[in-house]
Amino acid sequence: MSNLTGGRRLSLIRVFIVAVVIAGLVGGGMYLWNTNRDSATAADTGRWYGSYVDATSTPFYPIAENVAQGQRVVLGFAVADPKDACVNSWGGYYSMDSANETFDLDRKVARVREQGGEIVISSGGLNNDELSTACTDEQKIIAGYESFLQRYDSTTLDLDVEGNDLEDSAASLRRASAVAALQTRAKDAGKPLEVWVTLPVDTRGLTESGLGEVKRLLEGGVDLAGVNLMTMNFGATRAAGDSMAAASEQGARSAHAQLKALYGQLGREMGDQTLWTKIGLTPMIGQNDLMGEVFTLDDAKALKDFAVTTGVGRISMWSANRDVDCGPNFPDLQRVSNNCSGTSQEDGAFASLLAADLDSSGVPAKANPSPVEAPVETAIVDDPAKSPYPVWNAEAAYPKSERIVWRGNVYEAKWWTQGESPDLPVSDVRAAAWKLIGPVLPGDKPEEPVKVPAGTYPAWTGGKVYEKGDRIVFDGRIFEAKWWNESQNPDAAVQGAVDSPWSRLSNEQVKNILKETKKTS
Image 1 (cartoon, rainbow, N blue to C red):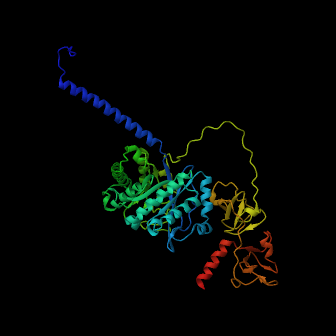
Image 2: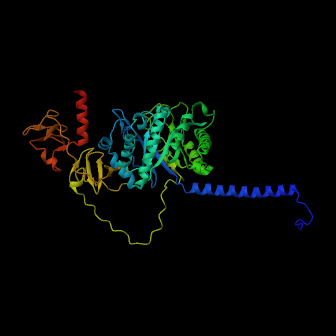
Image 3: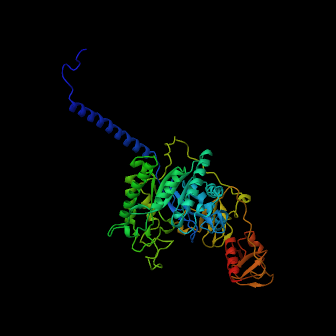
């Protein structure tokens, strides 16, 4: 047999060195391949911005204001009805129908969509029972979630699990099973459901209960889009001198490490960049619930920069209702308000900062269009038979709160007005006499007038003198005298006559009168 080594022996040291080099090259190649794959996966994930809106807080928030193309509105909170644990409600106060009747929620949602926005249904919150906590019937839980998603044509469910809900492991298992089944049903219908879970954190990351919630959702078969961190109310875990933004960043990094370990334990390892896309950040703007914790505009900019750098999948804030200055009539800025931030700011300043530079669309960019002729404006003819309110008449006078339909939209008078077109362009919306409520919806029909019982006000009497401001009842409806008059029948006002001395109160005004009458009776 020939000597292939030429009489020399291979050095074990040389063999070892070669093996180490080869292993290094292979390992380095695998590292680069994994890193590139991680980057590519993260890049394919659309990031988005969406403010929370407290849907039932008064005054009711105009959810369609300042919603940019591709942004989302996170409507909270869908919770178990206190009177029927297996029925969803808004805040425990309103059914879907009563929410539409009371504060035009359906029409406002339609307006959000007209502007290119999307609706997220947030279930749970701090102050009420999340549906899976109160209800033990899984099919009814599924139906409750599904009814809200379908009513508002939403493909994103936000599970806001905190307080007592977070400590109920049995409810957590029901929630996971119901949501997984709901996702399967949605996927089969060709309308995949995106699911986020929103949980409290401090600078150490998620609580043990929070991690348990994530684990049960994943083990229960939920395809979790991400974990949204409530970066607020840090308490003693925030180091002295640390800003709220710094504490938020620390909490996010801690949670990232926790989630990386959890996904690994479940055999679902993923790269750092991909995992960041499965994390959301939600600060409480302005004054937090804990004394001394104030999330400022500088904090908002810093947190947004951190979010863009790390590539988080979502930024939200609590809440759009609060994104205004409290003004001089609110003296104690350390007292948390549902309607202002407690910091000096311009209206909408926090939303502008947090959404800036964020690829919030998640919507494919449109290709440059081919040159086409400019469209010709076509007249929109309102059909009274399909309009929920009377069609606007340039000759008619409208009192405050009166609603009309004009060119496919519903408007409400902000004060007494006559002759001013509801869609008249104005440089300052505050100067407009009409407030846009939202579009006329499919299935709309003329609103039935609210009639009052006899004795609510005196019945109109022919031949009697009436002074300005006098109220009477005619054909079950309330009218108010615009000026001194005698023997002038209110029926002309019903027909919209401009020269009638009577103005008919709107349904909303009549409803308020009936409520007050009921309270005092």
